Image 1 (cartoon, rainbow, N blue to C red):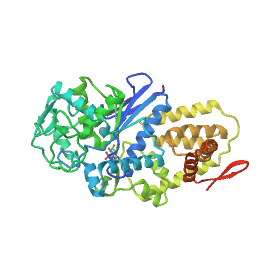
Image 2 (cartoon, protein in one colour; image 1 turned 180 degrees about the horizontal axis):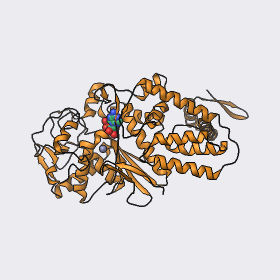
Image 3 (cartoon, protein in one colour; image 1 turned 60 degrees about the vertical axis):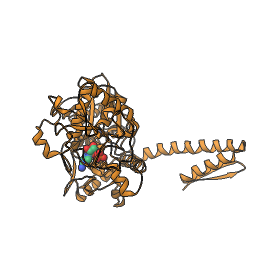
Length: 468
Ligand code: AMP
Ligand code: ZN
């Protein structure tokens, strides 16, 4: 395994990343709250987490990555007094919570696909795991960290000596960082206590509710991530990711409840992506000043231009969005692709050079995920004195981390081979169905192919096809 140095929010320094089990990484990512489209700020976090995951795989780790989908419990206030964002979203659109959850989850994954973001190994909607939250909260009661008040169940932060370990700040300093409105909840013994299970809220329109030992209600947002992570990754986590706004209170509370339930430390490495801002400040779904992948497309930008824009800067620095800087990234991306397209696939593969540049790429990106230095190594390859074959092999190799679709023609060819195989498989199945007089299946296949622009022509010799 190559060495990888990464900043850890918990230790507040760059250090060697060493997972608990040799060669394996348990990775958890806070997923989207699906009450609206993801904005390109959210997607900055997901792009950088994607590069992180791919880089870990690139240097030889076996990564298991889990992500939740927040479809319940994330309130519009960090102070546990707001309305569930999902309920507010459903009201806004005159739909049910599950309808908007499905709609925006699908939209999120379409955006991810357009940005070459790999889907995590496990994606778990929060509403799937109610028994797991109840079991975890029961464990917190057994260990003396939970209490009931005014109908809700709270976590008792006064039992912890290092509640602020992740933030490194005092309670007073943090009050400034808390997002949105913070209204005090009189049921809390300490102001930092947080809700594990709601049965009472001033909003009585909560649509989804479940039975629990504490009454019919719904889980708090933080408990989701602890329980979903433990369900799929066990009691120890190597890496937990999110945007910097998640540090407090969300991740702070995740640590509090996970460690209180488990009785040992839980996650060793915390990775946080700084915000994408626009001129008015942090881009945020609740402020409504959002830019989406669809807007980029409508304005004629390839979404990968935005991926390039993100990779050109360091994930720990705030990034200011403007159309001018995006235009610079577009020009750089187009130039890069043109230069690569001009490289002829000829000569021998020069293994020594390949290894030398690969090592440089690993050293540079492995220095706190420095993607812009990774791009510099890529430009060095293009300029270097080596065979076209070696260059193209290196570019394809680096692109397994950068995911900028740098070698598009080859990719298109591979895709078209796959597509042809798929079409011809269905044509064979259709011929078989017709032989067996299964006309319904035969028609179904014809329309399935038509959806992809494939037209079939039957003749005595067999079936031929064309694609629009
Ligand atoms: P949400 O859908 O609001 O739960 O947020 C999804 C992810 O996007 C979380 O990891 C947030 O920390 C992150 N995030 C939210 N706003 C921004 C922003 N302006 N820039 C970068 N990441 C963000
Ligand atoms: Zn989370």
